[in-house]
Amino acid sequence: MTGKDSQFVQLSSSPQDQKFRTKLSIRYSLDRIFKVLLWIATFVGIVVLIILIADVLLDGLPRLNWSFLTSFPSRRPSQAGILSALVGSLWLLVLVALFSFPLGVGAGIFLEEYAEDNWFTRLIEINIANLAAVPSIIYGLLGLALFVRLMEPITGGRSLLAGALTLTLLILPTIIIATREALRAVPNSLRLAGYALGATRWQVIREQVLPLALPGILTGTILALSRAIGETASLITIGALTYIAFLPEGLQSPFTALPIQIYNWVSRPQTAFHDIAATGIIVLMVLLLLMNATAIFVRDKFQKRI
Image (cartoon, rainbow, N blue to C red):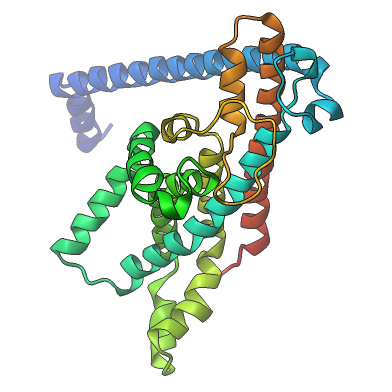
């Protein structure tokens, strides 16, 4: 053994080295413990979710048929259906998409591509991030004061239009954030190349940036719409009805939605209403799964390689 090797052995067996090894061993042990706890938490969450889904399917599947989808709500559980709530949810989905997509994408493009980096822009960004985490009932109170009462001559009060505008405010921050993140993921070199060729800023955004950012924008929009379609508190706050035996005839018509109809059935004491509430939950879950699947399909369809 050479002198250098013996010196290395002496250093490796020093008290400082032993202390370091002890700390490292403790860290690895804590890492393994934390990993086990994460697996346990994940397993418990999945088991609970499976139990809940199985319970809903067992109670709701026997009642799921074409008559349930094409019948109006009734005070008799055997005759109750979900047609008015399903049509109301589809109306809301279309209206919210028409209102929120151009506003959210336009605001995201302006903040990311045009707005200067100053204190006012940073203040807006902070407020948008905070609004994305505001509880939905707050938006319901805002919609009640603004769209139902103040703008009653335009919206018709407690109407489809008021509900759609309220849900639009709810998901706008999410769409703006998703749009900005999608635009930020596009390399800046593409913008510089477009400017070097003499293109204007809007031409570069329209022809180069937006096509590459479109998958992320559409995915974020569809996921935000999925949140809107499952909201209950904000719609109850603005006065959406819990029992409607007719279909909406226009933007100013009264309406109901799937979550509100399910809430109405669950609140009743009869067991039969609880079973059809489970059937309504199945319909709502299928609608949400279809929207999430659409988001995945759109992302893969429009995905482009740079």
